Image 1 (cartoon, rainbow, N blue to C red):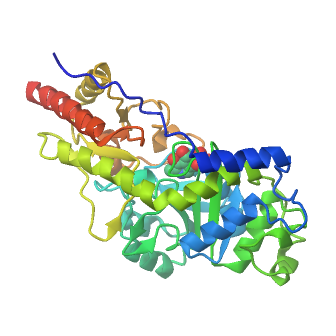
Image 2 (image 1 turned 180 degrees about the vertical axis):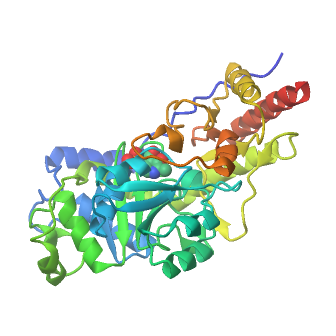
Image 3 (image 1 turned 45 degrees about the horizontal axis):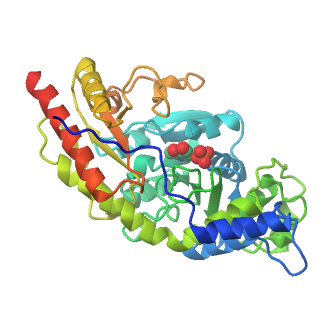
Length: 397
Ligand SMILES: Cc1ncc(COP(=O)(O)O)c(C=O)c1O
């Protein structure tokens, strides 16, 4: 009898008790709006921003309604205008080109390597005519940030980091989100902290921080922010920065503050699960494990592997056979977008040239979520099932 996995790939852990208690206290107060504070009260959102700034080492932090909103706000804050070209990864998820399109700019897709990171040669080739790179650390894979930042500086590119999948990860000891000019995070349910929806933006640049705060809908209440620049900076930007409301509320912030305290320990638990799957899949014929550079300290909440140069039909067979045994694989190479696995050529509002080397990689990417509700034994079982099914289909080929 073949073993069947019974776990649920989309079930996250419950919200911790301390977060539930903090949320109930906010509900009891009735003061959910971030600027609805009692006398002498900072408010949960302002405190979260202060704590996230301290955790990340950034001077300024803004909490907002979603990761996608943080990305769009970052683009507006650095001055991206309709019609501007904004470089971004061909391997990413829809909210990234979506954020670029939302400000009327034009996404320019840069290829992906077999290590699942942005192709720096392609970036150099496409940099002409662009001023901003929205760099997506897609699925937690981090490019050589020293080389990327050097290249961006030489080309005059402002780097906005999409850290939706790298909250707590580092390259050469530098926190993901702290290499670029602005770092954006998501706290949506499938990310490293869970408030249902939510986003965070960090920067050391006082003017970008002030613009982002005005953009998020601070009315003229910016002095209530704690991880923010001084009033003099707001005086410079407040009359010509539009209000595009997307604030975080006190309820979400209350849920996030206790999770931030646990974040580093939670990331360790995620990585332990990742390593079990990695060990279980190593040396499977036909399957390529993504090797991680020594400079990268990842925080993986999902696992990717490649079935490089496999015919579509055979990949589909692996997906179907694994599904029958309870293992949900997402295939980024599928011709039509399914769930979150869309490809750059599915975003037809953003015209793109074909990229054969990138298409080869995208076609071979298989993805597994690894929620913390899975035990390490569960992860070992998942790896055994994937290994067995990939091996049988590969042998029969
Ligand atoms: C790579 C990536 N960037 C950005 C986002 C946007 O986050 P949100 O869903 O909070 O808007 C997501 C969300 O899934 C994502 O996966």
